[in-house]
Image (cartoon, rainbow, N blue to C red; front, top):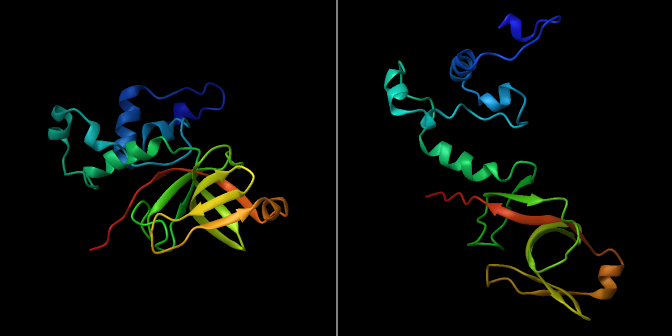
Amino acid sequence: MARWIDADHPGLPDPASLAVLSLQLDVDTGWLLGLTSRRLPFAVDRLPLQLLQQLPSSPSRPAWFGAVADKTAVASGLAMAIMHGHDMAPRILHGSPYFYDPTQNRIACNGVYVLEYLGQTIVRHIELRVGAGLLLRCENTQYGDVLVDEAALRADGVRVRGRVTLAINVCDF
């Protein structure tokens, strides 16, 4: 390992050493090499069956974790928040994480957005109404729609934080 950080002749680890180190530290090899900014556990469930049978003990995390990590890999670089409230249920459940693209801070098309409105952070379906403003809708039909007129939009009444791209619903039983 000392050769990896040698000041005069630094170098990358050989693949076998990197794999062993990743497995022992339970970290993603991409993170060890600096290829990803998010530290993820080693993907034990992706090892070939022959190697899995040679491991001295069972993996420290459940097999489903790899599937969830794969799904959220598309969300790297996005902002993440936790849904508070039931206004977007059943699409985004209370307590569930959702990911949004903060670079999409203007409403160019209809979709689900994270907004700052009346001093609160909210998630809403946005429908552009030409000449009228924005229609803010909840997924939960127990909540009514709100039409924010163009005058309120010009007065900075709504700030777009980003467009929601992914939600992972957590259901407590």
